[in-house]
Amino acid sequence: MQKNRFDLVVAEIKAQAMNPPGKDIYLQSFYTHVLNNLDRDRSNQLIKIITETLTVRPKITHKHFVNLLFRSVQYLETNYLNNVNYPNGLETPEAWDKEINQLLENIEYEKHLRLTLKERNTTTTIYQRYCGPYFIMSTLTKNKVTFVDLGCGAGYGPLGISKSVPFKEIVDRTVGKKVAAQMRLPLPLNKAYGIDVTSHGDPESISWLRACQFYPSEIYQMNDILNFEKKVGFFNGKVTFFESDITNPKAIRNEFPKKKCDFATVCTTLYMIPDKKENVLKFAQGLLKPNGLVIVQDFARKTPNGKLRFDVSWTTGWPYRTFVWGKATGYKFWEVLKWSSGRCREVAPGDDFKAFLHLAS
Ligand SMILES: C[S@@+](CC[C@H](N)C(=O)[O-])C[C@H]1O[C@@H](n2cnc3c(N)ncnc32)[C@H](O)[C@@H]1O
Image (cartoon, rainbow, N blue to C red; front, side):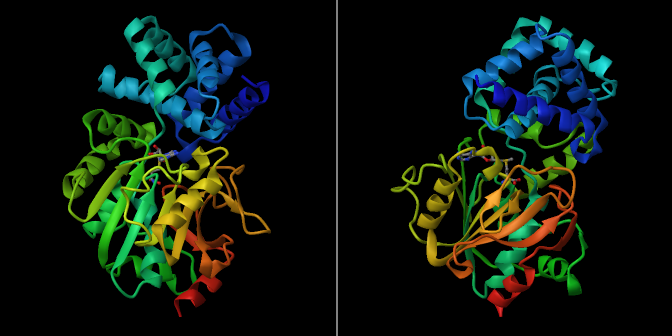
């Protein structure tokens, strides 16, 4: 394992301990617990598991790994321990110390944790995030839309849009509150596709994705998630799912209808892909009609030459942003929207918001 990679992971754990996503105190105390052990006791069992995982997964990005670490522990708590009190009592690093030590004393739990870290990807899927792509698609489309969601996770985006599930209200800082207004308009759908490396709709994947869905302090939202799933189902005739690696443009060449889509959405997925982001754009282009657009939404910033960079804070300064890319943008990323968090409840215009509106006129 390269030292540099381990240092990046430690820096990310530190950042999350100081400034946890959603200001979540359980996440804060969990990551502080890990940091304390990194400082004091490198022979600690959890630290050993972290080091080993980084060795067996040389390609995992540090941000993905740090998220995955917590989600894997949460999966154990909710799925294997069936801890109905979770996360109560885990407000301090000391409480996590005791909890993790107890967990890892059990050979079965330890095995599950290792396996989850080795084999799974974070699949947190938030329907609300799709209001950015919805705004773009419905602003630009006059007819019925066909879109493909790359890295679709649970598929809530295409499934929810296919059933016209409304988004939650947002605070809209654009002039004329254009995003909020557009979200209330229907988006006639011809067909949607979802593609992910994780298989869609099998019981194992479903229980894993549920453990990924929330910060611990959001656990009360579980019923909303279950109700949403009941409403949209995991399958319906308007949406087709494929299991494939989106960094390999040839992966589903023969299965997927070519050049059929108006849009390809890539939400909160490119940050997980360390060195093949260009391949994802190539993959998307192969699925799009000639004038189709790629919509990327992620914790990212546009560079002066119209590319994206992902070395950004996840918690400060409008961290989550919506970009479009394609022939109409000269194959440069345009920043259309910026969100106050990845939960997408407050939006402001991005640098290229006006230019984007011209595309529609
Ligand atoms: C954080 S989830 C995002 C889910 C959803 N798009 C959202 O924003 O709510 C990222 C998804 O990307 C998928 N993913 C990561 N790398 C991938 C790859 N190379 N090919 C296909 N899917 C990938 C993961 O399995 C995961 O389901």
